[in-house]
Length: 335
Image (cartoon, rainbow, N blue to C red; front, side, top):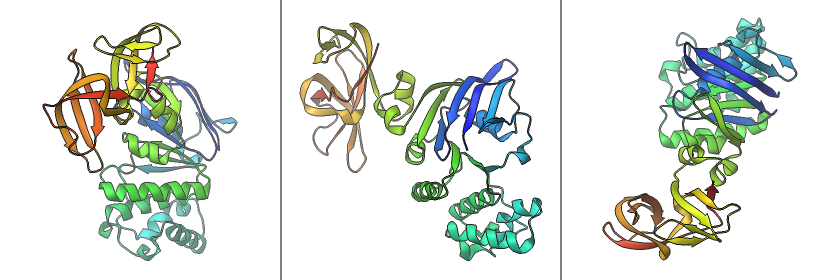
């Protein structure tokens, strides 16, 4: 199912939670909504689900507006941060609850629920009390309950908050494979940028109720539209420079770079695109953090600005001054 948002707006008093957002989500894709707390991503999801009514604009499923259709009629599956399983029901009864409310016969809904449990690799938990499940098992049951109603779209709002890192990574991989198998349209709200990049085909970055950029994870990371996107998605160095005559002049160093226009620019460069040991930039190392395959290093530039880059172990230590070079094929210059 295709989903289209047309100038979607929602206000709470003087606060514009969602400000005239227009967006198209394609059939079969997993679409991410990310941004800082209060940026409007959960409010957008609730308007798509039908729990909030827009003050202006439209929500269109395929070719039909659903703004005036109640949530229970929209055929939307929901998985929220608060899993809220029914503790007075077994696992299989939880999964079969939606079909039961829709009048599906007992034998059919239990059979369908068992199929979903097998799909999620938790069939052995069918008769288990939800209170005796692990966090990951509960999350699978919640997902199964959402899938049991055969939704046209699946909405996920911070579904993995509170899970440990190892379990979260495993569930991310499993859910990507599952959504591909089901060819399901899904919208995933998360504050975890890495989770969005792993799970989503495309992502919208929101800020103050508006969309800053929409793109694939690669497009957003490699070609951020502005400083906000660069700073929010991953780690970035944002350095002031002047572009002129085929160089970027940082004031304390010059780097060869052909820029379309001359003048003051912001240079966005990721830590992994800075190499120590050579180059015209120089920095004094102030701090380091060992991360296994790399050492995240913080340095001070001659003008007092800060720079972050990665080094191999024992290349340099805090207090050392080091030369740095940029991979100019990978930097982003914004005028």
